[in-house]
Each structure stands twice: as structure tokens, then as C-alpha cells.
Length: 271
Image: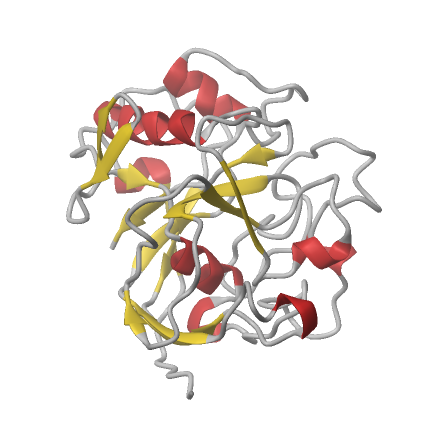
């Protein structure tokens, strides 16, 4: 399968430019910038050893989207939700100890404060998604992997350094079991990938929209995962993990109500 590449400029918009009517204060804050990720077709998954069954290689086409430059910080979460559940405290640290439900509620709350249509309808444990809404949301698993690999500019490799300039090691781009001091670290302290996105390898796992399930074998367009399941996907590895769990294609999931000090999220938005 061929990867189609089209030349698109890199665009990084501050959150307050994308949503100028936000009611939350922007003074002295570490608000994430939203990175424009030009759509395209790529090969998702890997054929690497014991991972190949769980990471079945398949072709995915995506429309363009935005994704945040960093994981959602504790400062932003506190500003929007008026609380900070994190174990490892610090304004510039990623928020953690949040469930998948917490993450989608945050997305709706931020959208509301910014005058944007909410993406999610939440009825108890039932959450549905309006795909056309312009509010903030979680990335799909496919969007996450595409952005982590560097989109159309990326190397599209299978190792933990995928999506980064050649010759770098996992320690150059992420906080993990070897270099983290067994705790989270401030965002934007390691090197970004080719799209200018930070911490997609390590620091905290990142919730995605999708239920965890088997990949399709045929090519798909803008997939959003299985319609039902027990676990929601999170990606990217965390400060406690070995390097093989920082692989761009590595995938895992937990019940959407679960919380851990190694799990946070980043936000996305329709183009």
C-alpha cells in the first residue's frame, strides 16, 4: 500500500485564536496550540514481531483535523473544570488520574466556554459523537497515530522514534521508565515531532475516542472504531513504561471509568 503525500503548510494556532470568545483566562497560562494536520492516506499498525496481530496493518484515509501541541495541562484543566485530580501537581504538567468520561466532559466544557457546539451528548454512561460539531473532542485512534507519525511529513516508521527526525532516541522525544524519575514531567521539554507536536511518546498515556477492538483488514476512511466494547483506547506510553510501549503503533485500553496517574489526554478539533 502506498502512502500518498501532498504538500501542505504547517499551521499552529493558539487555542485563543481558534476560539477567541473563550471565557477562561489566558493570562500566564500554558494553553496548548492547535496543530493543523493535513489529511491523507497512511498505513496504520505494524507487522513487527509479536505485535502484528494486535496491530494489523491496514490502509487508513483521514480528512484534515487539528490536534493539540501538548497533552492537556493541569493549568488548563483547572481553569475549565475548577478542579485538579492529578497526583503529580504542577501547572505545566499533564493532567492525569482522569477517566475517559472525565476527558469527554472536559471537551464539552471547553467547547461551551469557547462558544462552540459541543461534540458529545452524554447520557449517563452512553456517549454519542456529533462528527460535524466544531467543538473540542478526543482524537480517534487513527488520528492519534497519524499525527504521532508526523502526518504526511512523517517517517511512518514502526519504532518509538517514528515521526521524528532521523537518529533520535526515545529519550530525546519522551519521558518513560528510564529517564522520568518515575513521575510525570512538564510538557514541551522534549523534542517535538515533525508536525511540532510534543510528548506523543511517553509522559502520560492519552485517551482516544475509540472502543478497543480488532483492526479491519480492508482500507477505511475516517474510522472511529467499533460501535461497542468494554475498553476505550489510550496511546503513547507513559513515564512508567519500557521503550517498547512507546512504539507509535502500540495500543492498549481500559474501561472508560478507570483512572491512573499515568493516563491523561490531548484534544482534537475538526478542521
